[in-house]
Image (cartoon, rainbow, N blue to C red; front, side, top):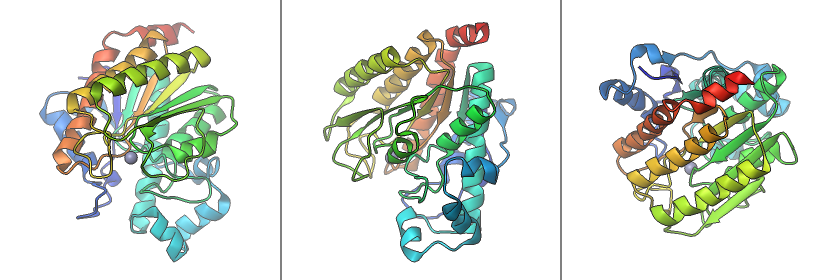
Length: 312
Ligand SMILES: [Zn+2]
C-alpha cells in the first residue's frame, strides 16, 4: 500500500500499435506496480475527463473546437505525430482530468501521481510532438480557479524542452517553470521557460545530477511554490530512441530522488505526470516510470512535506 494515490484509467491507452509512442506503457506500468507489490488495487483512483471549460483555460476556442469536431487540417494533424481519432481526444481529456486529480490529491495528501499525462509540447492554439492538450497546465489553471493554490512550480526533466509549458506560463509570475533538456533535440525553437538548462549531447549520470541539483537549489531560492508538478520523462535514458543523453536507470532514479528531496525539504506537495519514454525495449521505459513511483514512495515515507503543508 502506497502513502499516496495513483491516478490511472484504461482509456489512457491509445492502441497505436507499432508507433514509436508506446501508449500501451500506461497499463504496463500499472500492472508492474501491482506485480512488484509497490501498489495495491486500492492505491489507484480513476479520473473523470477534464471538462471543456477546464481545457479552455489553457487552449484557444478554435483549437478545442477543431479537436472535438475532427476538423484539424492535415498539417495540424501531422504536427501532432499521432493519428487523430475520437478515442485520442477522449484519452487526452482523461489524462488532463488525471492531472487535475493528481494535483488535488497532492495538495491533500502531500503526494500523488498521474500514471499518464505530461503532454508538455501542447500549446494554446495547437498540439505537437505526441501532445494534444497540456494536461499539467490545465491542472494548474483549474486548481488556481478553484482557489486550491496560486503558486506552482513545474520541474520538467523530459529530454525534450517543455515548450508548451513555457508558452502557457510565459510572463506569469505565479508559475515557475524549470526545464532540463538536451539542447540539440526537438523542439526548435525553444521558447523561454523561467529557467532553461540546455544539456550537451551524451551527458551521463554524474554530470547531469550535479547540474540538476544546482538548478533545483536556484529554483527553490528564487520561488516558493505551493505545489510542484514534476514532469518525469523517461527519455533521458541512454537507450532512448528519441533522446541523446546517456543516463542509466540508476541515474534516473537518483534524478527523481533529488527532485523529491528538494520538494520534501521545502515542504512542497508533489504531483507527478509521466511524459515521454521511447526506449528500444518498452519494458525499460516501464521500469523507469515505476522507478519514479518508488522514489516518490521512499520520499513520502519521510513525510516532511505532508506535515508542513498541513500545518499551513
Ligand atoms: Zn520527451
